[in-house]
Image 1 (cartoon, rainbow, N blue to C red):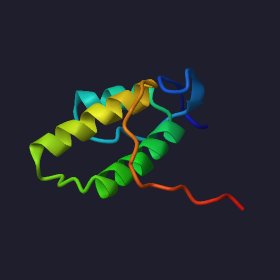
Image 2: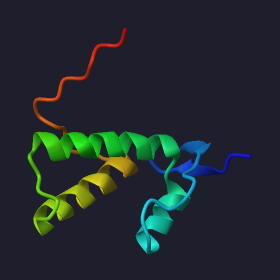
Image 3: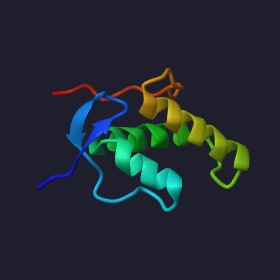
Length: 91
């Protein structure tokens, strides 16, 4: 049976993550409040931000920026888009 959570991004009950995405209290909170769908969408968006903005994840400022964007994305707030990204056309 699939575990469900009330997703903070989509404001509805959806299938949850199988395990916390990272250790500690922050990972546990995401596990309890973010759906699998929202997390997968965030991971794709995070990759676009890192690539299009040429972020170095060894840089603490870049990591802080990604953390802030993750919080905005998952809470349904306005978040930065990757400039230059053009989604593929659906066939």
